[in-house]
Image (cartoon, rainbow, N blue to C red; front, side, top):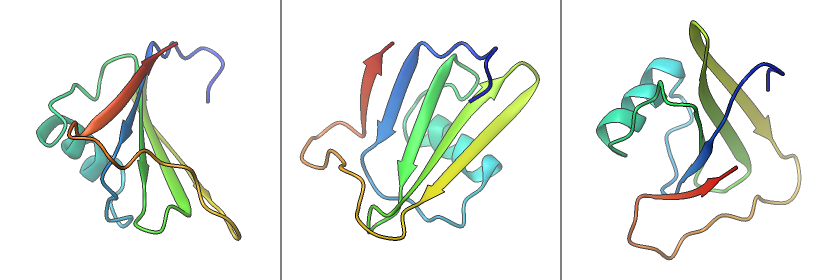
Length: 91
């Protein structure tokens, strides 16, 4: 992430997403599905169905930033058994 970026919250989207989504699709998902503001000082993290890829979206000054990581082996640990659509933590 950018050194001048202030992130106060991290939200993990519990449900896997379609990884063809890019900035526009993910920011719409944050607003419409999660009921959160994509412009907040927060990091929104998404995974694919197999938990081998992550995408992280955040707003920085005058535009969105999107980071992606793909594991060649292994999987990301991911919270699955909960009724809330997101898990969050404060930094």
